[in-house]
Length: 72
Image 1 (cartoon, helix red, strand yellow):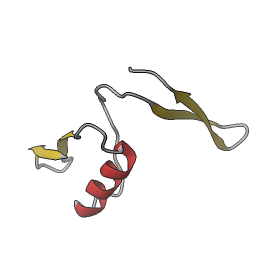
Image 2: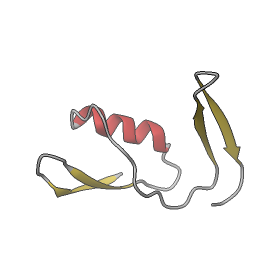
Image 3: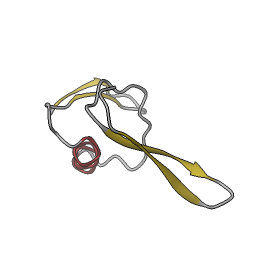
Image 4: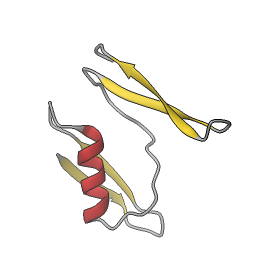
């Protein structure tokens, strides 16, 4: 993974570029731990061969996973 800080103000902004085959959630979580990031948002993601995403169901109070098993 490559990373670059593009804003070091009160709200820091980073660009991350993951290597092919690198597990996205694990890599982003490790980066956040190294940088002592306790809260964040992701504003853009590139392509994946497959992914598991989801949404939070407020009534059920749990995440509903959505598996995507194709290039996207």
